[in-house]
Image (cartoon, rainbow, N blue to C red; front, side):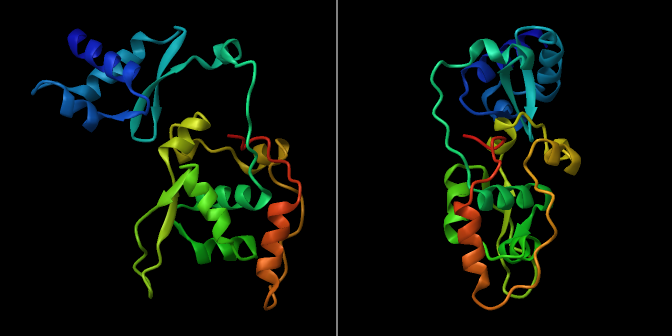
Length: 203
């Protein structure tokens, strides 16, 4: 088992992206148990400067959370999301798998193609399975990259509504009223261009 831990450690250290136990098993000799080895390795790293963390259904080596400030770069280039993109991303994270129509129903305005394309380009969302409903609409789900960026093991670790409001991500405003024809695109455009409190979602 110690030798298997060493294999897991080497693969996680060298990999630019989190690895699933299936990925590890394909690279390890037959008869190895990567699931058990990675759990043992995680225990071995407890309290160290780096930690073995779970990212969705995969694993990665990351800096210990309390030591993160030591590694902050001197120059950081940030790209803030629009309010429309933040709202869309939050809906997908909390309601996945969710269709575009369901997103629009929750937001109360139409979702522009540019908003979805931006989130896809950032690899924070991806296409999920088609729903077994008329038209077989495609669904959206968040990616392991999204979970990794925010230090989440899974969707169950997402903050609650009170935490989001405390962080300024959600505004205390009444839900939007019924849409009239032509309102959707205008509202989404305003949402994208209006300044929003979106510091939590910086790339």
